Image (cartoon, rainbow, N blue to C red; front, side, top):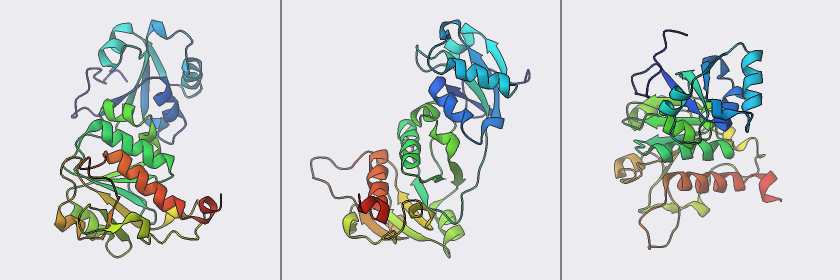
Length: 260
């Protein structure tokens, strides 16, 4: 524990920081708990939301607790953050049989965290990130994900082609692209008549481009091109909004949802 360098987050550190009680509680509820190295807590924390539960869990799992106002202020993104978790970085593999969200060169940390939160809300637990991309271990991403990052399988690839070749024989690819694409309402995702729990066990890949440039035509042609219809007043939707619409449309086709 003492060898950890507790300083403002940089990408080259072997650990990151989980800020705030609600995000830490998600970490305690996940299978990533063994990566939690220590808790740093402010004297302002008192017994506010989740603090008692966090301290109880630290005692239960023998996790070091350090009381240090200065460090909490130094590491926090917001003034009202009173507890920080020091988390060793963890690396996971995608489930080959399940559905994947694929983000090509996501650059905005808030959007990246928002996608994580959104896909977990719909039950899609696998995320492929195509580099170059924002650092998904940055505390800003973890905070934007509201702790969803701890419940996902996340894997990086050097190119979309690398990802495509790895999964070519076993998956269906749907690329979200505005031009010369099929309206999402008329796309067969293969989820009709499946149960709600089966929808994201299909080997489908839902591919989204960069926030500003989208997918290239070459990348879009790797799969069935899908568009989310919109008015012309704006040029595109926010990335995590697009992912949310797409996953809801996929899930809506399931027999459990469509009958309600």
